[in-house]
Amino acid sequence: MNERKATVSRNTLETQITVTVNLDGTGQSHFETGVPFLDHMMDQIARHGLIDLVVQAKGDLHIDDHHTVEDIGITLGQAFAEAVGDKKGLTRYGHAYVPLDEALSRVVIDFSGRPGLEYHVPYTRASVGGFDVDLFSEFFHGFVNHAKVTLHIDNLRGQNTHHQAETVFKAFGRALRMALSVDERMAGVMPSTKGCL
Image 1 (cartoon, one colour):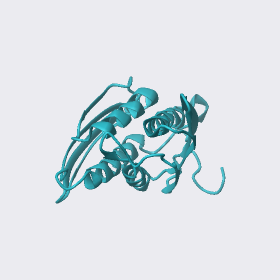
Image 2 (cartoon, one colour; image 1 turned 120 degrees about the vertical axis):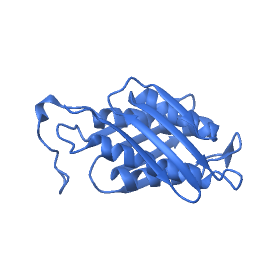
Image 3 (cartoon, helix red, strand yellow; image 1 turned 180 degrees about the vertical axis):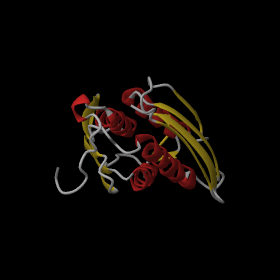
Image 4 (spheres, helix red, strand yellow; image 1 turned 135 degrees about the vertical axis):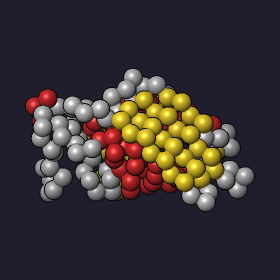
């Protein structure tokens, strides 16, 4: 199997971002984004997905976090698309339920080659530690549009906004880990991305 690694840079008027991923890593991560709560959530992706992840970003945080968060999602999606490659041997589908105290979230992903997001997270507060949780929707939209995956995210219950967000990202990491696993019985076979196969 080829190494499933990628480094992608994205430079715009608002942001300069570089993302490095190793899909067959051990969950190591390093972040320099200027958005601490997003860093904390991306660390959950790395730990629970067993993905090595490095994200360096400079953005117009003096305005707000929007451009930085969205563009990190876009660049992360591009890096995943490159690292996955032709998808030969890929399990393709992944799902996970993750609880944290009163909160419970479900994430289901399909490396379908078609972007699509269903995002249903009724946060109980608008922000955590100064971070606008509405921006997580922008992060995941950026990711799915560029990784070309179908992603369903549902927070099934929760009263603590931090817990709601953390269960979403932990479940996302776990679902990625399942979908990105290699099925030896599919060696050299590309999973169908047409119809319902």
